Length: 271
Length: 357
Image (cartoon, rainbow over all chains, first blue to last red; front, side):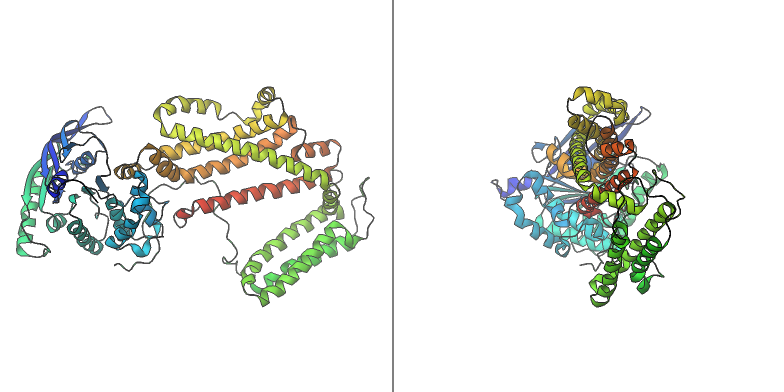
């Protein structure tokens, strides 16, 4: 992507600032459910930050607010200096389900961001590059239902990247994959992150995944959803999943979540 | 790089559309029911011989009709000619499939079906002309019906042409209107607020109950007939389009919005494609409704077409002509259904392996 700004300004423009943000939903019985309560978080440009916490802690809600799909009830969200007022091609999103459009082939799915912005004619060549980047080029002309779960998520990743978003929001994108595919895809996402320098926010249930991938881990607690603390992950990549320091950090996060989360687990919370 | 087969191991979570039709009939090349095999290819020839023998040598208990008696020799009457043609074609096919492999699956698939169809005609010949269990003038035999089909082909052809024009005009108008109202009601909440109650009140009225209204609104019977058919098609198409649009998976819309999609993209590139399986259910229901309405419309205002022809022949007690028109109608309507199935298979090819209906 060609931008007229200096590198520093461009980097600054892809930082995410969340200041004292809250989100209140009206439940079916008329009562208010506080999904997020006064969350503040800054993610510097190019960082990989994980959001973890038990279900009901509002981590997916926070991601939707940053994506601009829902407005916050209070507080402010910014990308760089710009207030988030709605969804934008500058903030890509990936879900646990691949959500590829089943009526389009893989290639056309990946192109869809370019088509939506009316710039396909100028960027068509990049579609092949993105398919190569995620290793899906052999499946360009098949329909999504013909893909395995891992391949479908690769295609979804390419689709989310095709608009060169400044920020990529990942809502448990690997949650539905089997263990082996999942570990391979973690490396794939890291490779893309390192290659492109995109700011990434990753929502996950998986503590290992959070430690393996991110620069920092934000731990949220439920009802109401609050930011409990932020942990730096100081290890160099590639990380060893069975390194004593890795395991120690895992144990301490588990301990934090144990007394703050699982005791209050209630089904049907806001995920 | 994962080594995965290109088969579906991803559960598609979108709900399958309403079950309207039986599953798609097996095509040539599909598994032939066991027990036929090589003998199957000769079945039509055998049945054709039986048909000829029954027709030529069994005495006729049904009296000759009063008009239009064919004096040509028996073998050259339309029904025996048909049986002779089937005999020749099936013998040729039996030989041909031995010599040319690509023909084999096709012949083995269709031969038993052809034999079965001809068997039904033999039964028809037996209960009418041969045994006179079913009597004239109401139940003519196949030979009489086929000869009337040939004798009156000019009028029948013209009636068919008129019916087709009326049917397609009404159907296409109804489909266009139904798609537009369906998308509007399905997508815009404010349109839905006003449109849905109106649809629920107006839609269930049988088109045939609106005959007097249509005849007062349009002076020419063609337009009033087309309007009635259009109305009958419009309702199911609107209903199914609406539900398809309103039930688009929200995450598809969310993803599209984060890809920079505007409203037009969301409607035309996300909502409508994802509603297509539902829309096709509406198109099939509409097609069925259009056949019904066509025949009713041709019975009241319209003075042309197959429905009109059948009614006129019934009036003059020419039941053989009526059945001849019925045969043509069956051929036309089932062809139209088949064409719509083909269109659906082409448009929804992305669904293959996911949903069968």
